[in-house]
Image 1 (cartoon, rainbow, N blue to C red):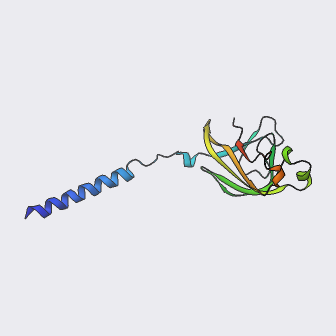
Image 2: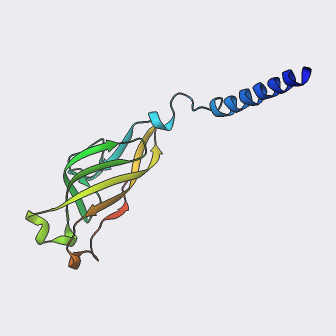
Image 3: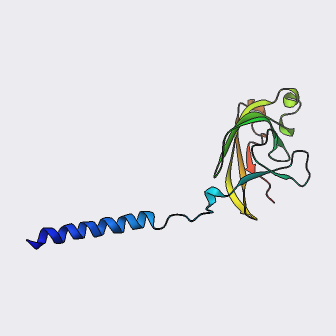
Length: 142
């Protein structure tokens, strides 16, 4: 008659261990999810500024996003819609930048802040400009 009690105790022990494995290793306060996330923006700043959700963002020396409305921001990714232009699409895009969606990713820690370090842009770029289009790359970080 002690066999069912033994099995019940064993089942409880396994459940307790499983719960501990799932919950005992939870992240402490101050985890990456709570670290502020920024992008280093070179818009009107040679050295760059740490910004969150900038309306205008220099992606590289060749591409800039303007009029960005951010749909999401952090802790590991940011996505926004706006217009892209750059040296690769001149003169066509000077007055009529292309509608685009930008995704920032690959957060790296720098002095207690997280910085997005990569970008990828989806845009309807004319076929002749696609080989030169600067639609993905590495963002500057401090």
